[in-house]
Amino acid sequence: MHLSGMVSSIAIGLGFLALAAPPAAAQSQPTLPADLRSGWELVPELSDEFDGARIDGARWNADVEDWGPWSWEPGNATVDDGTLRLTIRYEPHRAARRAPDASGPTDQRLFYKSGIVRSRGYQTYGYYEARIKGVPTYPGSSPAFWIYSIAETNKRHGFTRGEGAVTYSEVDIVELQQGGFVENAVGRDGPEVIDMNLHMRMIENGKEIWKRPGNFPELAKNRIEAGFDPRDDFHIYGARVSPDEVIWYIDGVEVARKPNLYWHLPMYVTLSLGLRSPHVTYRDCPDGFWRCPVPGAATGDGYPASMEVDWVRSWRRADEPRVGSPQLVKASTAAERAAPPQSSVFKPGADADGDGRLSPDEFVMFMGTRELQIRDADKDGKISAVEWLGDNEGGFQRLTLDRFNADGNDEMGVDEIVRVFLWIFSNRDKNKDGFLSAEESAPPTLVR
Image 1 (cartoon, rainbow, N blue to C red):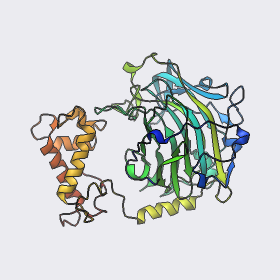
Image 2: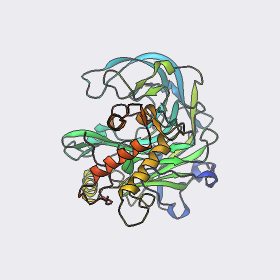
Image 3: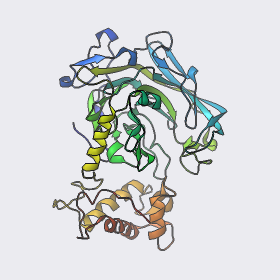
Image 4: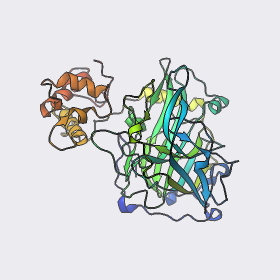
């Protein structure tokens, strides 16, 4: 199954099997389709059956640096009866956090402590898989299995910080139970929606910028409708990272893939239990922070709560390098710049007459219908100001509400939505021929 695009939304349903984990000695191949299983070697320093009495400190670091509006606590990562348990607890405390571009740390009042383990070793290319059961408390906590880079290790492998350089890379093999990740007026996803995304930072025009699922969905976002509740049972979540692609799997079934343009840095295998909405917000955070705790939502109800990991296994191939190189990053960056931009709307559903371009009617119908489906939470045929703004209080949504809500009634009716997308159409129609080509349909930067 080959899936790509702005949002990979796949109803897997009964196609998934909760596979039992054989003993380590019997596991000689990864959980992949039969024709892809050969040629792999298990990487012991990045794998664990968790059969010991405690965390293997030579293999895992459970005392990593803190970030975000909660704290990591080594005692919240434990091994018991062949299972790794990462536990989140309601423990109000104060801790220092540094906002982006801040000159120093700020003392913050926080409410939760949780568990994490990060591998001592690292690699780039391979197949990573773990058998995980979600956390009972929902919403509020998100089990995650991911790999990410560390600046000091990048430097040792020759990755520099010059123009075009990638300074951070992260592959989210899976993030469970995010509940839409941020609170919004439309409501949140149910626990059956699973995120398998990419994140990175790079230097462009002398500035370090983020490329994430929110601002570069074609590059980085995969939203999977799994058809099961991950809290009910264990499932195997995996990702194949090669020099050319990143491919995600659930229980051995491919569910998403993206070109590997930037994910070539050495990365550490990580399992963690993070905090999410309603305990975290991205709105009106003080002191320059882009996310912060929500004191009014803090509660001990439902806590402590634990995610469970039966095992984690990392594999590599003899015919691939263990770690990527700066040359691969440069080649990928050049390839992306040379290629036509990917479109978020130029697809069969938008191009109704199949002529390879979008008319104003096609563009407005496709985009307007999508906005109504996404934002009209109460299904009254219009979008209130709260529904329209969502989590973009100061961004594009605010710009369009101010510009096109002419009657000032704080609602975006059908006529106003049509005007919004006719305006966007006009901005994208660079040659002013009255149609959008595939290249023109890719979102530009909109300037007021």
